[in-house]
Image (cartoon, rainbow, N blue to C red; front, side, top):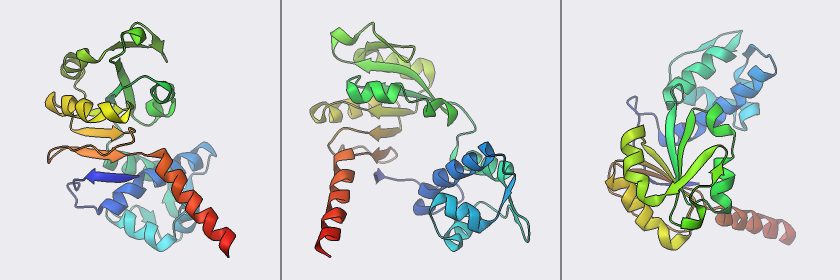
Amino acid sequence: MTARSTSETARDIPEATVARLPVYLRALNTLADDEIRTCSSEDLASAAGVNSAKLRKDLSYLGSYGTRGVGYDVDYLRYQIAREIGVTQDWPVVIVGIGNLGHALANYSGFRSRGFHVVALLDADERRHGEHVAGVLVRPFDDLEAIVAEQGVAIGVIATPAAAAQDVADRMVACGITSVLNFAPTVIAVPDGVDVRKVDLSIELQILAYHEQRKAQL
């Protein structure tokens, strides 16, 4: 997963640290679900899959939330991380492209529990219009501008074929969307001030294939 463009937070937290904060939050949520109230940096680092020195350095950018000899208060730390990355509020999201991948994303229950609310599903295919996916009506792509204005949408998800992705991105940016999650298998160009996260499942699989091939050669 790579970023086309990035912006630093008000605290100038390094981008690599920002990328790990959601991982720490997920680990803390798991600990909380298991009714664990405090944890050491070693335990949290193990749950997040990083070393404890890196975790302590990452958390130092947020402030000092640990207690020597006690560790971290799980609920308090997960609130502080959630606040830092902006998921203590409800972010409206629009998904464009309701094929197989778009359906899967729309049905993903993790969005709501992590601070994101899918307010609209859009597709250019008239045959899709009127469908309901996860309780949300599929509407024409031409409704994008009105939905963004009405719902205050800042985050858009592109799940279209590659050929349509740039046009979709251009429309998103033109109507005020400033963050884009791109699942289309292509690179999109955006102006400065717009953040793009690229998710290419085929590339991730190819990386795994490379490692498997290296293992076989050893």
